[in-house]
Length: 139
Image (tube, rainbow, N blue to C red; front, side, top):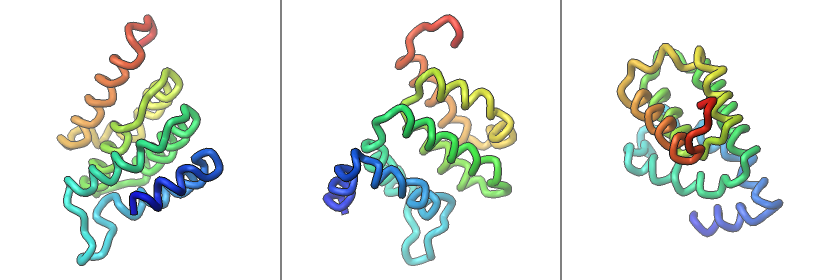
C-alpha cells in the first residue's frame, strides 16, 4: 500500500493523491469502517501521518483544513469523529492564512473542545503554529 500511495503522490504534481485524501479520511474517521476492519487509534494515527507527508503545498493544507472544519460543523454527537478530525488537523502545517481560517471558524468546533482528545489536538495545533510562525505580532 505504501508504494501505491507513493506512486500516486508522484502523479500530477501530487494532486492525484491530494484529490482523494478527503474521501480516504471520511472512511477512516469516526469508526466508519465495518467491524472486521476497525482501526485502533495507533493504526489510525500512523496512516494519517503517512498520508499527510504528501501534503506539502500551502494551498493543499488550507483546502484540507476547510474540508475538515466543515466536517466538524456537521459532526454532532460523535466524540470519536471529533477526536479523529482534530488529530488530522493537528498534523497539518499551519501558515498565517490557515491559522486565521481556524480562528474565523471557531464556532464550528468550539462546542467540541470539552472532549480531551479534541482539546489536546488543538493545543498541539497552537504549539506547532507558534514554533513554525515564530513571534509574529498578530498571533
